Image 1 (spheres, rainbow, N blue to C red):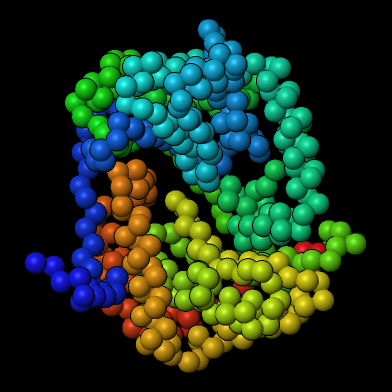
Image 2 (spheres, rainbow, N blue to C red):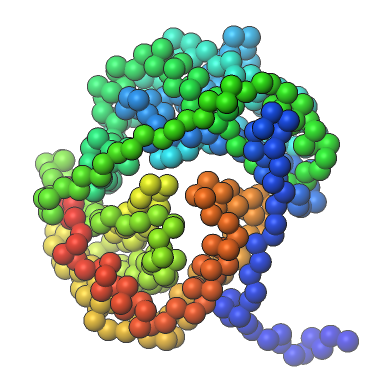
Length: 426
């Protein structure tokens, strides 16, 4: 019998076994890849339709955002209002997001409403018409939003650091300008939509309370249409990193705050140093208890928050330090950031601090695989990056076993301040 006078043993997350549950991997009748996971007790589902239609595939700047922004704003038989009213009637949520490499449609709904909602999604993906009046509204709103954003130093700093790292003509470094939005034409959107949102290029992911009946409904709507067999082939782009290491920009003469960005190129998830760098980056600036946060927020009081982050894309990536500070403490903040980089390069990490970081990382990972939606999202990331469960297991092993010495060697390779571009925008 359980003795409630004795507290249960406390275990570190590092002691747990981590298992990524398996998913079902199928194809619809016409060959569209289908990945699904049955879990949970509530009658809800999440479905993702993923297309190679991110910024990497743009033929004109601002095109991917325009297409995804207007995708559900009308078909040949339904207006934008009718589509939105149908989604609201069934209590469903439909989000359409363009990323750097992929565009994703995400539907959340009760399982029982799939027969009514999936035909609408099919119509959006095969018969969107991008009405001219909707395009003009989109352009007007996008320009207004851009003009407001361009007055903010953090927005300009984010644009600038990516452009300097990858080059302004590179998809990962390109940023939207007012002229690009103004020059968008309806035929541009239609051409991009027909090529990159073709069901030939679709992958479908479904999770929640899912069984044969739900798969049959999905197949009857999306699996019966004939495909052309035309697969998108991604273009190649050259990365051109700026030779100007330091750029300080005055964006607002009356500004009282400055945005600091320090950035360097880094690899994608396939690189052998990616998982070890996740540990080092977390310790350095990846969570609230990091070195950067402890020094520059807690001790110096220069900022409300400072972080470092790894951005892994399909064809490369970056490592960036980002914060906003008062204009008068920009130079002291830069000095302290570089001081923390030097410390990690020259001094081994204390074992107690390293254990804390490992438990934080692994604790977050436990949350990331808790529930059917999260499990399939983890699988989706692996599949879209050409990885499998062995990659997941290897990363867990690295998070658990990496040593202080290994982190110091990594820091000497990737946290040398001289290797970083410095962008400050006031």
